[in-house]
Image 1 (spheres, rainbow, N blue to C red):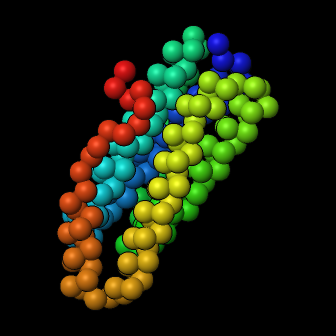
Image 2 (cartoon, rainbow, N blue to C red):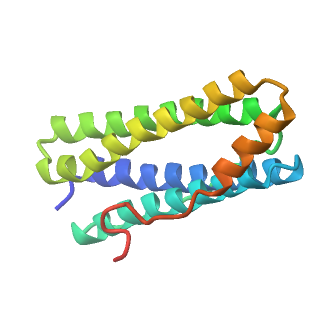
Length: 172
């Protein structure tokens, strides 16, 4: 059984994951509108991943006998200054999500909730990967600068990404 504090914190994380999904769909729309369909697709995959993350937390609360409480999702940005700005915003957002996951893990440590700590370890590893991926794309964009062919090739590369359901418990 989950403590009330942990149940509330995981419910807040569900909302944060759904907000992230909404943010990434907005970023996808921006990329498509700017003529970068591959980058748009990359963000659509991000959208799907964030939905799965929310579902993992949802399923976890249910499996531990808790109550899921869904709250309204705040509005997300809809415009950026450039494609580089979109990915820099992505990295900043992923760093904030890392902070949320770390804070949740710290709470489980204080509450001696080892089962929830075990579940969160996957998310901790996932966040390292998310930050690294965003940083790599930023590095590529900075190297490319305004080279149209380079941007075209990066767009093609990112568009080849396919969705793989990797989150634990996502299929429940």
